[in-house]
Amino acid sequence: MMATTATTKPSSKVTKGAALAASFIFSIDPVPASRPRVTRWGTYHLKTYKTWLEAAGKYLKGLSHVAGHGIRPDTPLIVVAEFVCRKPKTTKLLTPKGDIDNYLKAPLDAITHAGLWGDDKWITTVVATKRFQEPGEEPHTALSVYEAPRESLFNQLTQFIRGIFRCD
Image 1 (spheres, rainbow, N blue to C red):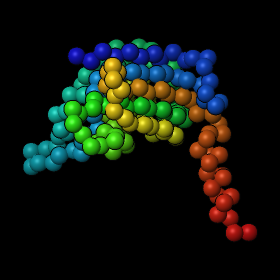
Image 2 (image 1 turned 135 degrees about the vertical axis):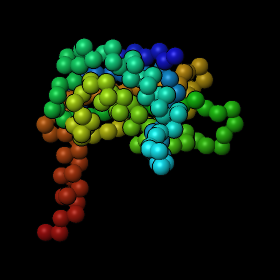
Image 3 (image 1 turned 60 degrees about the vertical axis):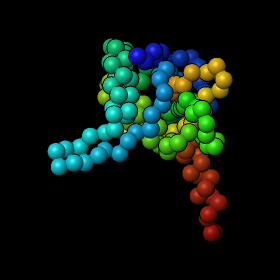
Image 4 (image 1 turned 90 degrees about the vertical axis):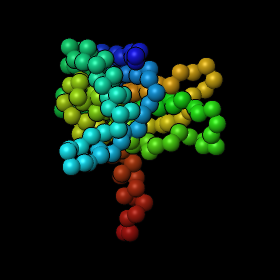
């Protein structure tokens, strides 16, 4: 069973010009998205990923009634995500296995399927980290969604990089 908390009401908190639209904490072991497996009978995802999506989706469906109150449709979004993974009893790894983009795909897909935003195509900027849990900490996924300001950090960074490579 997944204990999950979420808020979907806009906050007065503003981070670098971006207003917090929603935040989610999925109290379940993060799972990287699997590649679809193709057989002659059809396609499927690995059971761990499918189970995670079903558990997250079941909870998020209960939030659908407040979808319009936090994440406005057709608005560029910034997503900040932290994946805290269960640490194996023995490992030489400093960080969890799995690509960070695959970890990010699971909660984004769950939120999209639940209808809490129109489409994740509106995400313009992502900041994501993955790490092992600290002693006494439970594995979880924390996700904050911000409305992107008109002049986003990405646009500022792009302008800066273009300025570096100009050969005037």
